[in-house]
Length: 280
Image (cartoon, rainbow, N blue to C red; front, side, top):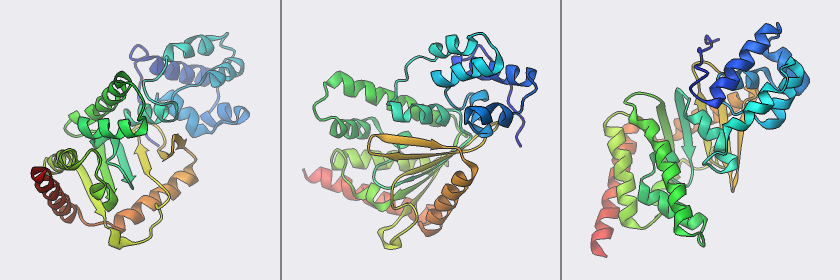
């Protein structure tokens, strides 16, 4: 098991709560499983709270105060976490993503958020909320672009994405937007910043047909899987479930084109969009 990373309690409210939870638990002589079991929380979940990977919820804070006799410490400080800029169903996943060492994702319909351009993201959000005022769309786009800054680091996190061929063929925002979006991905691939494979239509049926999948690993906490649906999302930390989703991803990768063949296909599709944009 990876050695727990020493958290700086001043770095964020989550780091403060995580460091204090670890301190109080160890002070009480409890393992992560010991603390979690009577609260119907897994030991791995406790570890993710302690490492700052997951956000402590108010009901959990109240339970920890009772279990550890902390006189309301966690309840008082949980409020300091504040409201996330992300939709409720994605907030925890976004926070976990920011701490991940490795991210693996299968995208069946859309370019993953971390790889989107501003124009592509704006087109997506406008379709999601066709009657929203422009300032709402601006805020959503700004939050998404902030996420993409994770890739500003030259090496971390490692990002490996499998894009269904539908991602390339679905015109989001029109040919000009699509050409630029695919060129952006190509640039990251050519700089060896990300690994991308395309799952072609010819691959037929596969284990991930039901929707997108994201796997995240951490240096100091158990791995997580994130499943997303229409306006919903769920983080999975159960080890057996995570292993199942890891197998799913591995089988999708096995059916995908190689990175080199994928780059050639993405480049070809981008050129098609560029020609189409010039004709209009």
